[in-house]
Image (cartoon, rainbow, N blue to C red; front, side, top):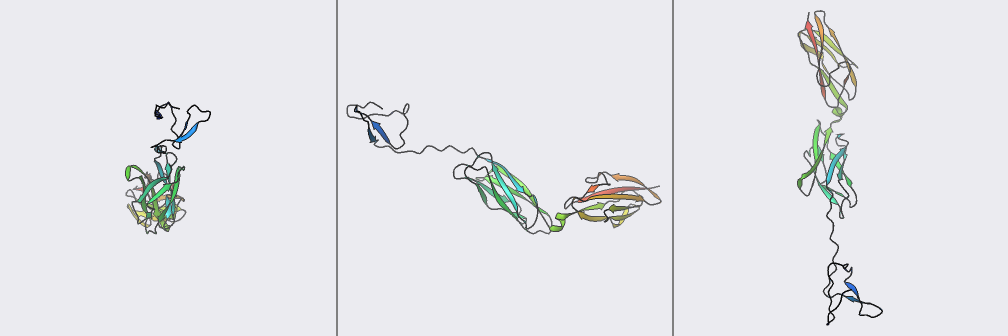
Length: 246
């Protein structure tokens, strides 16, 4: 309550009073019951909205390796719940010949994540695409993930290749069968390269010719131990035996 002047006008100060929700206040002139009056010139204001602190935290894709045109699922995750009206993340692909995405995905109000479909295309060789998420065109907010699209054969298989080393001769074979490489004077002939299903553990055996000795295997990526080489998807693992003349 405030005190009126002689003409009946009164003032409500900012401090010490709660803003009326509907521009109506109780007025008491000393009677037993207060009267309700609407304030002239009063406009109801909505409470100022609190700025959302949500930001784009991550963008992931599952699975990251697919055979085109199989789809994958992308997920955007926020640092906190999306505000009223949702939180929109813009999406792009840097290689639309391999994978495409919708132009945007919206995280619903109150949620922290949303999913979208990554569509892929048939390819004749493996291709990667980077899926990029940004907020409001601001690339400082960028989050990204990489998807690799494969043709069926290279998705299911990898290869091992024999690289001759030294000046001697010998023969390299594999278990399971596939490689049968004859090396003569440092040159290879026969099946010196073979494909195996992904995950196959291949054992390579080296047998020197009568005029040569086997000096061992050179340590190369993927072939640190030629007795158990694990075949990797769409990758050629090179192994190098060294035969030396006696």
